[in-house]
Image (tube, rainbow, N blue to C red; front, side):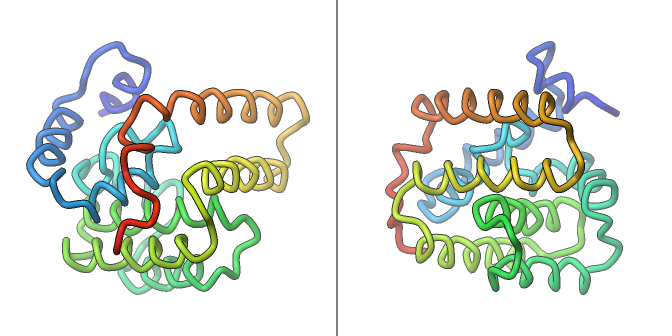
Length: 184
């Protein structure tokens, strides 16, 4: 049940994660999909597209986001696309994550999921000038969110440290290989 969690810590690769990576290999030639994966790469929980991780996606939609219906999910994605959230970089990530996880959790069709993610990406390209700019926006947004949730200063400092380390490791991924202004 928590094999995806083990895979995050390097203990073993869950079969669901392996299957997700296989699917990603099949469609990685699509620059728009690679772009979406680059948006998700900022988070250490995104080792694979959540659209291809049904168990993880279902748990995330239910437990993290409290999504119980397709309509609620679409409203939530639109909320983040409209930029009415208080943490823009983090909101971009959350909207793309929810769009893809919505497919994995069978709340959206695959086409609906990709189109929602592409809408977020187009909006992101208007708000940010580069992957680094987006990455810093994500970090600051995540820290603001954790602070708003009531985390103490030491916990927030730990989040910041981990996020900055993740940000540094992205140079070894497809993140910088994906042109920021890829047509979406």
